[in-house]
Length: 169
Image (cartoon, rainbow, N blue to C red; front, side, top):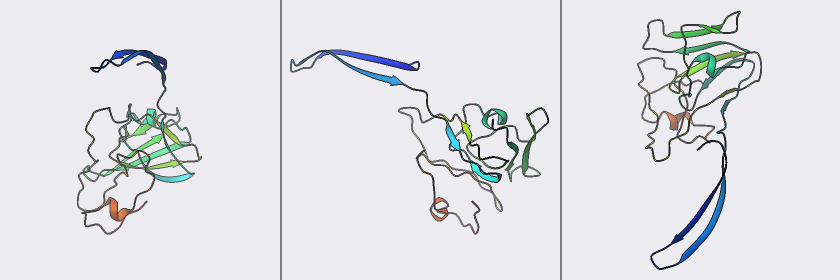
């Protein structure tokens, strides 16, 4: 349905002969709130709780005070992907998209949060816990959950089943 207010009117008779005539209920389809990722001046280690509707880095990170974004991909030669804001305000570099399966170092000069549209789970869809393929050595993994309200995780619980020695947050 389009955004807006609606009225649903129902008249029905059940198998026992009970009748309901013109019972109505109103509801509103409201715009979904954007996901907000808090930032502080300096370097921030962040991740996103899902795949943004539009993954282009300039669409996800619209905060003009963010000047550098770095991702680490140990499966790529050189491992580091970077995007730096150039003089015309656009990002340039080897990092072109933002997703929900990576962690990112974000440099900013303000407290302005990143606000991004990440769709929820479709009604009736099966939702599996997120997983990532890791390689021996360093990995930069996101913190995410099917519970969009979760804000903190214990590393021992989050990395259950892995032989790991150090995690930075």
